[in-house]
Amino acid sequence: MTPPGPTAGPGDTTGPGPELGDRAEVRATVTQADTALAAGSGDVPVLATPRLLALAEAAAVAAIAPRLAAGQTSVGIAARLEHRRASPVGAELEVEAELTQMDGQRLVFMFIARPADGSDQVIGAGTIERVLVDRERFLARAQTPVVDLG
Amino acid sequence: MTEVRAEMVANVWKVVAAAGDTVADGDTLVILESMKMEIPVLAEGAGTVARLAVAEGDVIQEGDLIAVIE
Image (cartoon, rainbow over all chains, first blue to last red; front, side, top):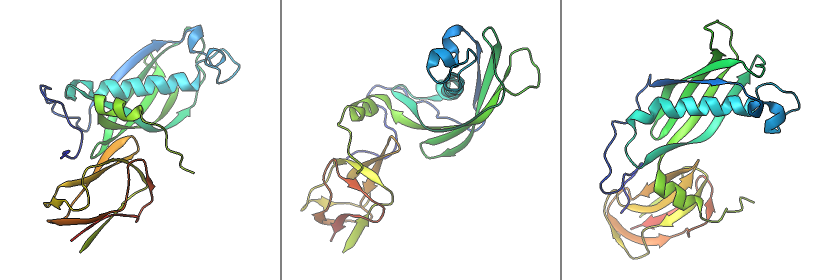
């Protein structure tokens, strides 16, 4: 019988699990590779919205990383993002994510992106939803054929 | 007789129990997959699996019959 919830394999250490208020920050400098032009998401050379989303996801992942059990990880299931200000190549930004809701394996983070110079400007903000899964089991499931949802 | 029904739209990932099996309260009958998660469907009482209405790979809707426990 399979126990409910995320399961760690034999020999895995048990993490304490994520807690509300867990937070982390990532910093990045916009390079040519991060632009909408390079990402294919637009045709101007400023920070691409999908790159901002990737930074927000990275901050969310980092926020709970110290608390996960070996063999456990999280995967993204939903996101809401407002991209309010353009960031040119060379701009430095910091993106902070905080765990604000937990519902079983489902985790909701709020994030905010600001210039790294400490100004109050908001480059972007939104929410990231992720779920806790067992890494090996998740990857095994991902290998099964896609079901036609008709 | 207890009918076990789906609480959400999901993909049937694993069928754990079989018709004729004796199950205890809390035993896993099937494992669904929804929003990238594995969601076990548990027996809500002891009995015998009279019928298993789903197969692995099935897409089920909220309210669909999964199993009958007698």
